[in-house]
Length: 267
Ligand code: MLT
Image (tube, rainbow, N blue to C red; front, top):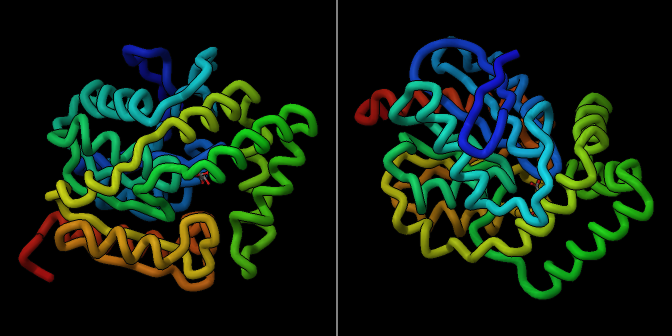
């Protein structure tokens, strides 16, 4: 498995395939394994790279109080350049989507296209921030198993298979406590990037699970409407974790998106 030294530390990533670079960014509190199906399915059209963000998966542990979206975006930009590429298609789920919007805001020349999956542009409101504080304390008191249990209930749709539940729990329960609390703090601090949406000029697909209760289809639709020429794709039978709940459907959506990026006039 490849490791790479970036400015902020040593990072692990999964790589499959060849062609233009596509970078996959995971959600909270997950890791690169959430994209395994898409890495396999898209390796014939892209050099697919899924990063373990700082403090997650096999990347270096962190001691920061907050893992901000801007810091992660800087790491992703550093990754793209350190892999010897000038641009990447960026595919990002939920917290990864917050990172992708920060990447677009600060490093947009590196972004060839965007797939914003089960995510939002807005910031947390006061109630949302208070809920995150409760989640951090509850996790520290009751443990990651409890967090895994709560998140499986909240994130997955009613049709989720046991395998999707198992993958989600494995990722959550393997994420260090310090990463969980620092990510919660980083998400609390993230600004509203709604205004950033109308600055996006690259091909963009907004993907959302039909049963996504965390970032619901109405929010995805509003995002897609605000982004110039963005496409909206609703994934039937999925909740907030559409890439692991309906991997083939998400793979097909991303395949069509890449085809559109490669031959913009064809569709
Ligand atoms: C995620 O899936 O990354 C999180 O649900 C995002 C969030 O809590 O805002």
